[in-house]
Image (cartoon, rainbow, N blue to C red; front, side, top):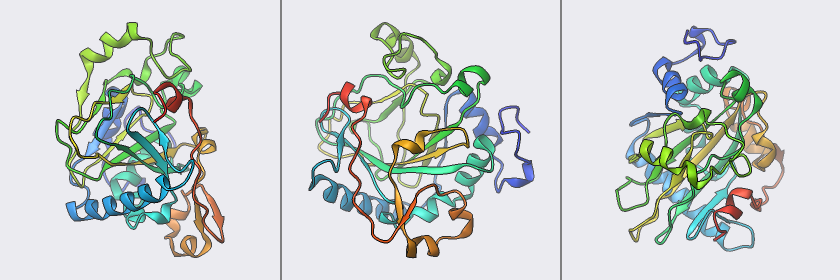
Length: 283
């Protein structure tokens, strides 16, 4: 077993061997599974994202700005036809178990949409570094991203600075935004990602990253799945719920990890205004 694998996990508890992925998360802060789904599966994902985006933008607080012409929307699991396919994918399940332990919790489902005119975001991480990470070099959460389009150079690809998940400085604004004096370190490490329909990536949201300028007229919607280990508290910032009928339709293996309210009627989520949105210039 890798020294970075959660100590409570026996190798035979994993459906697929994710040793190389766990190492990549520790070294680079990001890994990926190419071709996890078919392009047709990703096309259905895009239809569901576009429907949810249209609904969210039709009401106050439905979509939150993450910079000019760039939006984030949190949604309920049953708004995605492929939700169970994703969270029960052997690679996703095995990676969550290996890194976070068998008690991992799915706490966030949402999507980012950079539209035409989106600009470079400031380099950032998605939340301040937890004490477990600082003291023990242990990751307590994972962020999975699933593109709904084939990413091209002019579409404002996601850019990440590998190995920066351990960067720790009192100069980070709100614990998340490195000062401009740190930018050369990120720019020399920066890698742009060009995922295609059907690919899944997994990263530590502490790895310093940014969305880049979208020069095209196309949007680049990407699904976000947030997963916490037992000690992480990211779930407190999210409001996902499921209806009782949907909950009862889920496999027990999914229910065990789904940390959300069970309700009779789903209410549209009002996005919380985040420090991230404010610093980036709310759209």
